[in-house]
Image 1 (cartoon, rainbow, N blue to C red):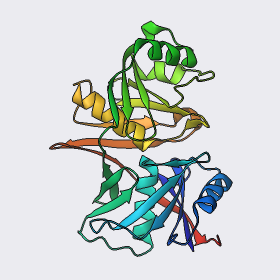
Image 2 (cartoon, one colour; image 1 turned 135 degrees about the vertical axis):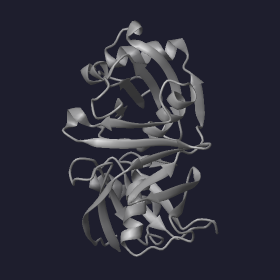
Image 3 (cartoon, one colour; image 1 turned 180 degrees about the vertical axis):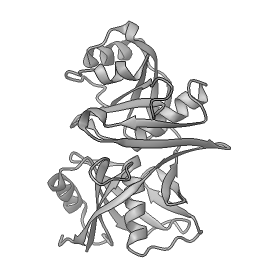
Length: 271
């Protein structure tokens, strides 16, 4: 089978978040998908399959090293880039439709930069105070450091905290997480910084370099509550020596999460 590795949310290879993509994977078993994802040891590995929904261009299964996800952002963009680079042709010019565990996700091509329409949140709204305190302790913060907290769960289970500044986000040194172990933090940059917000994402395997699903949930929250403009750029991966840039924009009722993508590796894999 054809194999690709794509760097996402960057225009320079090795500055973003890589995803491994196996093409034409309809004959691969669930067990082999999970085992291959553990072996690649990336935050996500995906498998492109024939769609079962007639409205979709392809079906995508997304695996972490510890299980399958119904949706994830950087794998969506990276897999779309890999599908296009392998000769895929969308039914509708300029827009792909991905079928995944979260349903149908639209992906548009805006001048070479791909963006997905943020899927509906599975859980939103305020976080219980007891849960906020648990997360605050895990992050080594005090309760007064948190400006706001919301569920931003579109599949992975994100809880998001808004801090006062990007510097506060970058200063966080997390410890061990409890029951809530998928946590995102966001804070505004000063004007003229080159990015509007700084984002970090923590999950059981550590810290994710650049995270589309979290940025989608954060955008739905912050734009919807008037705490962010309808269009902005988020930086992520700074402390991991990455230069991730997530381009966010609201068009009518849709929030689009976009980023550059670079195909870094192509070849074949025998599964």
